[in-house]
Length: 115
Image (cartoon, rainbow, N blue to C red; front, side):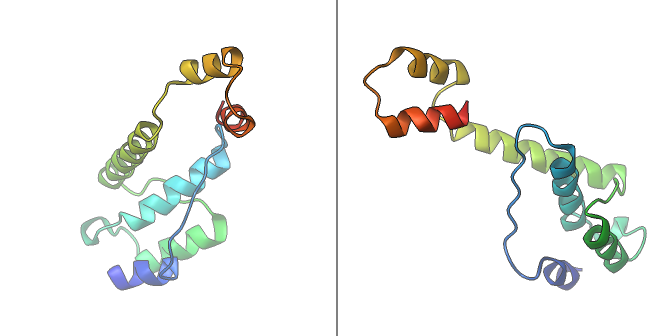
């Protein structure tokens, strides 16, 4: 199974970015995680067929409740880890942008992008 997954990913690191909420991007991310978290017990159809379906359609529906729980747990952990990388709240960023006249133009632009 590991060899099939490595072959599917091409042995490279994949990067997903979901901007605001784009259902296509979210479906692609969740589908990719479903494939990566398949284990032998829940292999309802051949993993290679699932991977081929994903590559063709960029979407794979939930495979099993057990797999979907693993997918959502991983997604939640990744989201919390990403959120925790930001030292300030959104409200604090907005206040800083509106009220601090001494921040650099680079910081001001970064705040505008993140807000």
